Image 1 (spheres, rainbow, N blue to C red):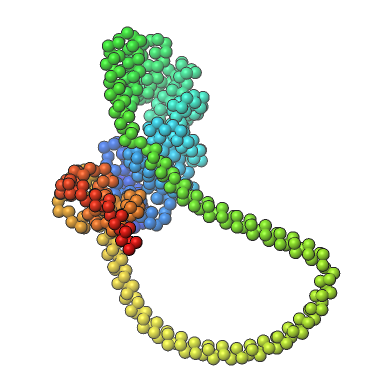
Image 2 (cartoon, rainbow, N blue to C red; image 1 turned 135 degrees about the horizontal axis):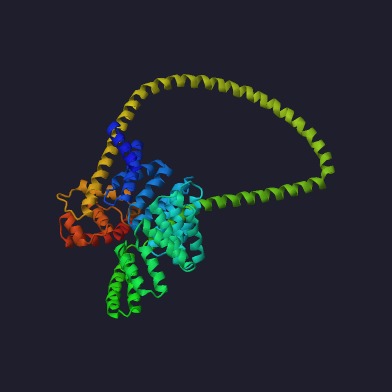
Length: 529
């Protein structure tokens, strides 16, 4: 499927002159989606961030919620944990305004997976259940199975084994509808779910999985079953095989921990001690990685931001409802009182009204006669004014025709200036993107000038609106040089790295940062004066 898509993209590139704007945004989205799928299969395939950044910028400005949600989703899938959760939460918030259940399913599944990696199983379970709910509404068996397996694994981690078995067994019904690699995952997850209740079936499924694809999970399940039978030699063999297929440092530490326990049972205390020390080293490394990649604060901030927008709308709706209800109650009360009064004085009102009506009729006749006289006089004035207006309109038409030519010239000139401004902004964005990558990679940039600084400020504040908002709230009247230093600090560079990038020394950078921090106080005092 990716080969066909590649051919289509190449045909578009070779056949059509893609225009900036809607065409380029959609083309960039399609090409990035293709690169994302190719990268999923082969990690060596490069994914061009500039493509999806262009799509996000265009769809944000043109309120295309469907494509904007997809763009943020793809950006999230190709980013690391902290950045990934930020983009996926944006994608979730926007996708909820659409009826694209397939995309909602993938977004929730991706958020669930990231939370599993960060061991936040409560949040992972919430989004896992959402992904299944959306998956039932679309006809995508492979993806639905993937998320059911994920949900089964989560339930295992939180100790809800019945639920884990339930979702694992549901996947067995889809075995004939999925490719072999996914069959292996199904067998492993079902084996893990039923390992406590049906050891024979668990072993059968683990072995079937190994026939399709070698994996650490299958060998670990077989090792546990052997250890429970007190067959420690067999358990040791399986764990040593599991180490060969460990996908990460986390898994390696976990497998080594089980291997150390097994060797203790076998009386190999010296070997067990060496492995235990290795486990401690790996777990320290894992804790450092988890602390660095923690997504909890970012995820909470994204949810609060989305809730704030929703609550503001809900508050307005709630206020409107209260006003309507109160108005209705008052109207009903007044109507009820009026009806009661009318019934009480009906007979008296009829007599009094007849007398008043006669008097009013006489007054009305006199008033109408006066109105007729006044109306005739007013009509004469209107006719006279209409003639004057007609004459003025003729003169205005002549003036408008004369002014129209000049206006068209001004509009044409304004259009050219606008196009130049857009082109300049695009060039600044692209140039800023190149400078950003060089700074990020530690490449020294020669000849810093105001335009280069303006370029990186334009690019960075476009892709990171939260940083732009926080900076504008904290500081006023920053120079391009000061703004560039704050951007590099936000990118995670230290003073020396910033000094190297800008071709100066870290003392100069330290002094400038100190001045920037003092600037808001000085500015507020000036405003008061």
